[in-house]
Length: 358
Image 1 (cartoon, helix red, strand yellow):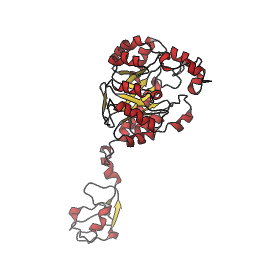
Image 2: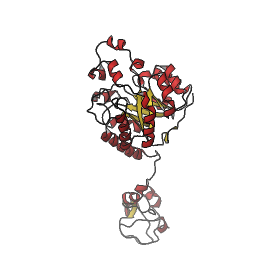
Image 3: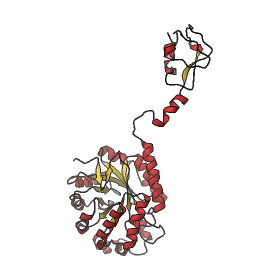
Image 4: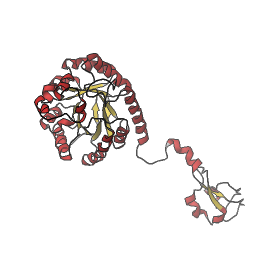
């Protein structure tokens, strides 16, 4: 199946040669308040995000209250929730009457606005407002839904947390059946913020994806603290980075604790932009800022003693010392000039030129 190696979202071009596209996942961090949602859009823009993403779920459409109540004690990051899983999702629902309002707010802030939908109705209500979709890791096996999203003919970010390669390939096929604009994202779905999670991020999966799907646009959906994981992913070829975003990590809610805040987000973007410069083109050459050091740090063949014109050069008359002007004879050329005759006087320490040899 064919897929595009360059993808457009809004005014942004996303490919291996373009700047990283940063998605601030506001998720439920709006706390059910429209003014907070608006504020987060502007804060994300100021911190350097290229897009804000919300999550369109309804508790009744994403979780079974019966199922979680009979599953036993809540585990993982859900163990810290004060309410049941169903009640927490109910409290965190996105008010779908906000769609047009927030889309306009994002447009005013000049930042892309899109979502991860979790039911078919959300897609129908959202489609005219957004330039792209995100499929959450939890829906990687819901191929009917993936195919429905893909048929909107908008770029699809596919998160692949808690899945094996067979499941990834099935989900990718579901997108590509209808849509060549896919961004394949490595992810780890443990949201606890535990530092031990670094052991399980498995960024090298990005290399596996690059081999399996050459030139496919890759990304990372991340929940670890700090910037190490993001920087590593960028170095391995990720060009879309998604992290949760909040105004204040101390607020009460399911996502605030492990989210980035305006300060840490800005730091992440700044370090990432530095890394983008540092990665360069991959073409080995004398860089522009090295042109002077080529002269200053390289060695040239120089006279070890005063030498008169007519002298036939021997190796013991020569030595290799810095600097090396552009017309100098370089050390690897020394054997080529042994046995040649000088046609000019040379002072001790002066460098030899081809034009001074007979």
